[in-house]
Image (cartoon, rainbow, N blue to C red; front, side, top):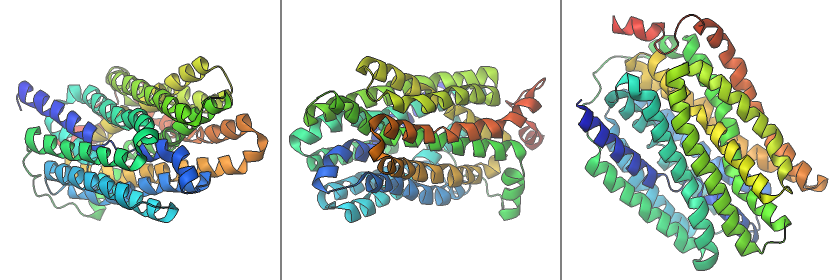
Length: 420
């Protein structure tokens, strides 16, 4: 594919995916409002957050294997259309914990057709030397899509109501479907290669670099989505503790969380991808994991610290918690043969997205259990629980780092063998 063609298609892919992913953290910023309207406990809010991720996990398991058999573009377009419709339905029909959980679970399932097909599109259209950076840029766009609603939903929901606000989110996602359908180029259907369970086992689960990459990605997701899901409520709690009115705390808390997740995560994704191109996937990921572990251990204890310090720490946390993500995706593209890549993504999401469902729920349960200990211990303990993720990642990747010394982990053996 010519450079001008893949670059224009890549820009359209990023824009369409940005618009279609607007729903991802919208419920997070609505928690302070719906806690009152629906009488939610923190553990129930955490279950709704986790239910969304659980739905996405279920979809990933199916979509990943489909990508080894059918084109990625139609999956993305239909997913974006259905996500927009799902958010319109949530705006109309969500009334309490039960209906809210069911509808967010549904939207989580529907959004599962966006992320993996985009990664397959990148693998099929971007030159290998550019994939780390391209994956980082794509993930930065997704992070911006996660972050933007934290601000505008936080501003609009208290003023015009959360239902009209969520309907507007659904309309943005429908526009994203149009961008994907109109501007993203179609890639030929994958060649028909018979890949049964034994081949997937050999190519993925018996492939040590792939297996360890998947474990590290799972730890990364535990920390990332626990932090993402609860950063906006943490900011609101921090501002409320300083005497801010509820409406102002919700708006400013959403803005601060959006800045930390959007700006920090975008910077982390872009430069993390470039760092993985230069240092190698394993070296870059382990360095970043160590930094994010320290952030998880210390961040929650700052709930009563000066707001400037809280935001600076959140910005750093948002940067490093996301920066290792491109390394895992790019590494899987390189250590797994192309005919099994969709299945590899499914195995990655099976464990990785299970962690994204469990972490927000565990965070909320910890908040309830520590409620009597005071805000510092409550938030400090909950965020520290997220440090388990990067610790697991460092342990999983350590043997790969040792193996990579004196060689390169950019084009490992399985890919070199597949090219012969």
